[in-house]
Image (tube, rainbow, N blue to C red; front, side, top):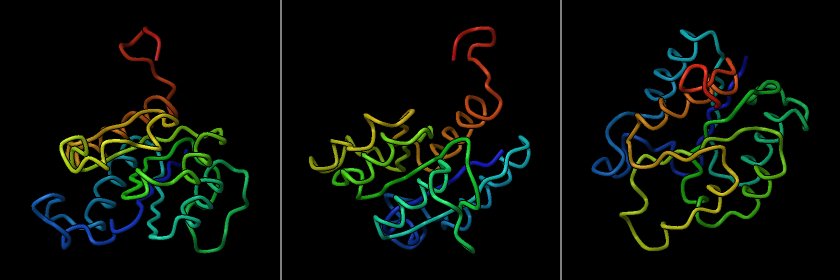
Length: 166
């Protein structure tokens, strides 16, 4: 089953932009590591990054299967879930919030830094209330945790703890 890894504005600059906050790994490094985790679990991870809000909405709609695939653009078909770092759109985008809230697609919100310890305007997420879950402040490990949750919950339909309710 397919999972979409989606990154919003400025995340294409990972490794170069504010390494003291975001670390030295590049977006390609992150995508490669997460694709290896997904493959080992029998899932396919497709990656998409855009600095443009409407392109992120379109990708969510493609992932949910309500918009047809576009040649050469991820995702290439319906997805079981999405791991999403909306970047700065976290705090401003009603369009992304409405897209996530209106689609039958579990979306896991991820933030590399602990946004609750940063500037006041970063303390509120437009995405969190409609997300399947949010992981903040764990660095790039947050992506792996969100991917693991998406695989276990939305691909394998596992409960945690085993025998419990998901």
